[in-house]
Amino acid sequence: MVYAWFIVGYRRRIFKLRKEYDHARERADKKTLRQRIAILKVLDSVEPTLLTLEEQQISMFQRGKMIAQVRVAVEQAKEMLKENYAPQQPVIPYRKR
Image 1 (cartoon, rainbow, N blue to C red):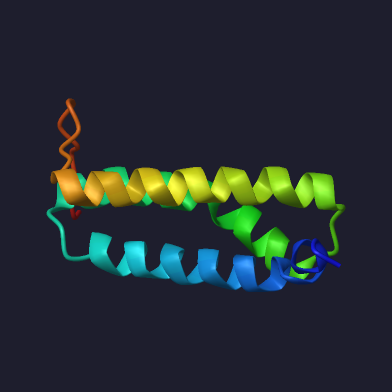
Image 2: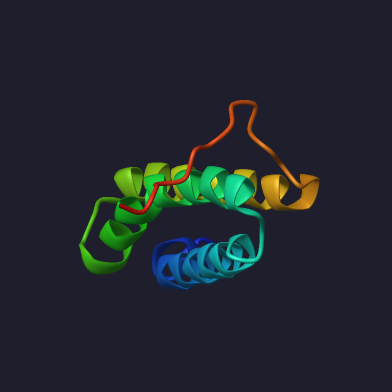
């Protein structure tokens, strides 16, 4: 029964990932436009995966791969927030017509 948390505790890990994801997204909203767009691109790329983890029944192997993918993206976004990351190419905002 040492590994019982591994079988039962995946919902808690997904909840923690969602919490970290939301927190990083809120912090990204406080950055400049250029930084915000770069950070939100990283976070938006894994949002469908996070939704799939929350809503569907998936095998443990697939779930582990998906959790790792989301975790890496959230950590990358956190690093970008800490570094005051600015992309190399300028981002041109949409013009109003």
